[in-house]
Length: 120
Image 1 (tube, rainbow, N blue to C red):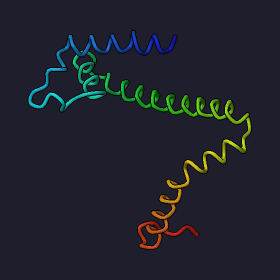
Image 2: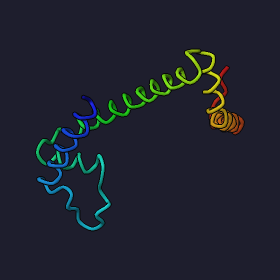
Image 3: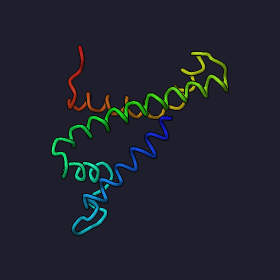
Image 4: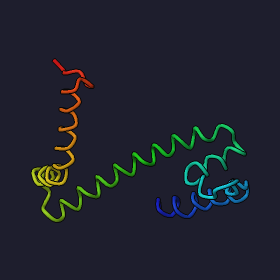
């Protein structure tokens, strides 16, 4: 039900608002405005307070998407390797090891140069 509501109803209403308000007709570069900015400017022509509501909705949508993909990943890992917390942590360590190593090196460099104060 959620994909239907999100894809068909919300996207259709948003497209209709963008087209009927004429927000898609920008001066100069047609790609200068798009995505959330285009949606925000379209709704703002009718409801001046709507960009705030849209910003909150985008943040909540992003957060719920991250949570959903984490859940899907955990379920897929459980299906492939059995529901084992140790396996989930090991896979996460291998995938995130290069990123973690880079972030630690950057942190240590910032502490060494004094950009970040050393925690005592």
